[in-house]
Amino acid sequence: MRLIRVMCSGRVDLEFLLRAFLKGQDGVYIGGCKLDECNYVTHGNYDALANTYLCKRILAHIGLNPDRMRTDFMSGADGNLLAEYTDEFSSQLQEMGPLGSSEGLAPNEVRFKLTAAKKLVPYLRLVERQRLRAPEKTKQAYKAYYESDEVRALFDGILSEKLAVSQILLLLGEKPLSTSDISERLGLNPSDVSRYMITSSRHGMVRYDTRSQCYALA
Image 1 (cartoon, rainbow, N blue to C red):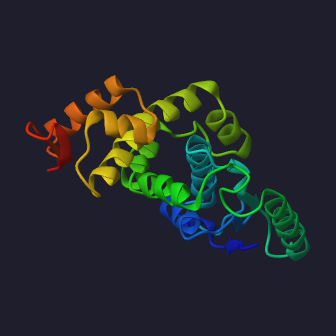
Image 2 (image 1 turned 135 degrees about the horizontal axis):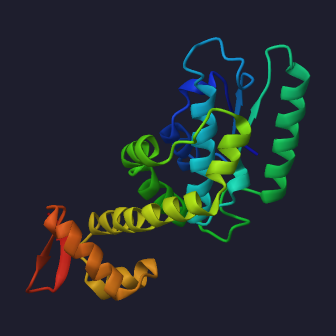
């Protein structure tokens, strides 16, 4: 069972978390200093906490168990807690098994979905800064905010469309496909695929070949 332990939590980026899973890690653990006891004015451990919530939502959205991601905050003197928490997390991962196994996802499907999600990180950073900011920096406020139905609905709504387009672009990178091909491969409604393709065509990302009646990357 593979486990990543990352310290200096303020420097942990959402892309790092998804990259770890993309490389086949079964779980990611972040251990940071106690909230409100950061040595720096930025209090970057709150950024790590926000990224944890976002990563968990992404994992859940693509069919992976969000409990494969965990973050705990403790002081430098809490070595016993670090050992306790990581041992506990390792045991949980052993029960879950390798990434995707307990979720019923094949390794190639896991890689495909994580690759599509990772390509959205620059956009998600912008969304988090502009639309997904907790009202105050406390653990309780972050929990209440990121676990609220309103924020879940907002994030899932944003993620659904962007992730679908990202997956479609990955498929078109392999070969041109028709609307029905894309719909069948991704389990999407054909009308939704058509809508995504019209938008992507306007943005210059894809083109439509009338002879083959297929979409291809522009």
